[in-house]
Image 1 (tube, one colour):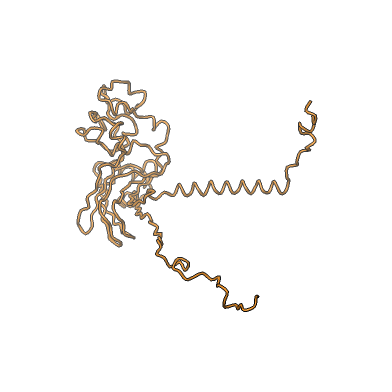
Image 2 (spheres, one colour):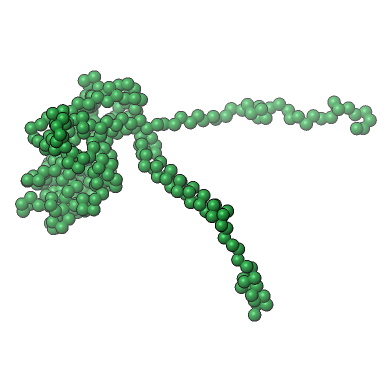
Length: 319
């Protein structure tokens, strides 16, 4: 330290006060608020069968007799409680289980050209039998997929106020514009001795039969959901929704189940457990394989080869 100097005369290295150094400038602080998918799932196939059809030892056969009878009352009233507020649009699905729409013969039992071409005159027996012809007249739409069309119906109300269901634009736009013809109309459908599921209005062209279009997109798994319609209004928490169900569809023969689903969506879609299960399964397999390779490396490592046998060591002169 030179003469005449003092510690106080040295310039301090401490930076001057500023809002920048003190991190007091205005900043954007985003707060992530995750949006959860809200779902209401109500299985109704068992509860919508009258008790006199379920108390006997032959309940299985009684249920089949109930669903096939034209005289039995199929109306069923259910009450659903909204657990959390559901913002519109609220999607209404029907869910079936133990229904193998992916069966090879079932998937092939259709004729796509017939669905879009009003002048189609091809042979239907090869692709659509046994639902190909009604006498000498073709069945439009033909095949087992269309024949087994889902035909349960749902009506919603809150405090005796009917809630309208939007059943437009529930199918793929490509189906409405390209796969189903605007000049093709149902003909001879669900007529004869073998009656399947729902019927079709013969005055509505195939391009507007959206229930059928949704049903004809067959599911890959035995438990699946298909869109029935949309509710274009919010549902508040703790509200009670009265649902009037026409329990027409026969899942009792193959011991399947039926459920009504109300669901909201996020920007990545609705609730889907399959994707999370698939990620966890693949991740678990990868982790297991990695641990196996590590143990093999530690317990029984691969011996290194003798570098003397390398080609450039066997012929060092390059001859």
